[in-house]
Image 1 (tube, rainbow, N blue to C red):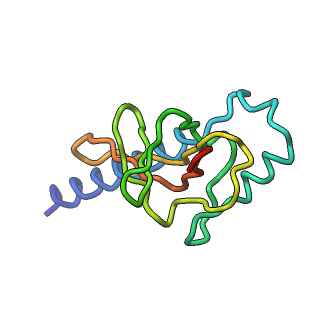
Image 2 (image 1 turned 30 degrees about the horizontal axis):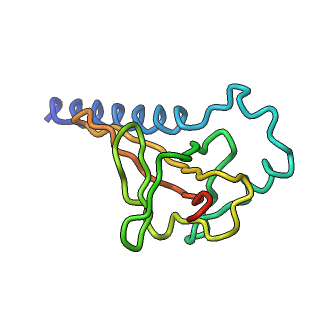
Amino acid sequence: MILNATRSSLLMIVLLVSVALATDAAARDNGQYTNVDPAIRKWIEGLKDKTGQGCCATADGHPAEYEWDIAGNHYKVRIEGQWFDVPAEAVIDEPNRLGYATVWYWWTFGLDGQKTYHIRCFLPGPGG
């Protein structure tokens, strides 16, 4: 009985640490966006997906200028060499003020060590 409780506690700790690391790892502004116009920065921070959830900040978005495509009636985006379908609710329909496609995503690690990507928002680029 004690062994099962210890195993469950250890499993919960590993899960919580994984979530914390994934959340922290996705949002880094190391000064690479210091030249972004404050009006554009504010606009980005106000972007929401179709469910009303915010896309996050400038530093959380990843340019996808050459890493996106339209397949059939939906968008696809390439993240770390793999293609992923963009969920319909993640597509931002308003005009793109950045001028290039951007994807906001985060990742988690499963107990098996597999990295799973979650697309929060996608802002199509020119021609999208």
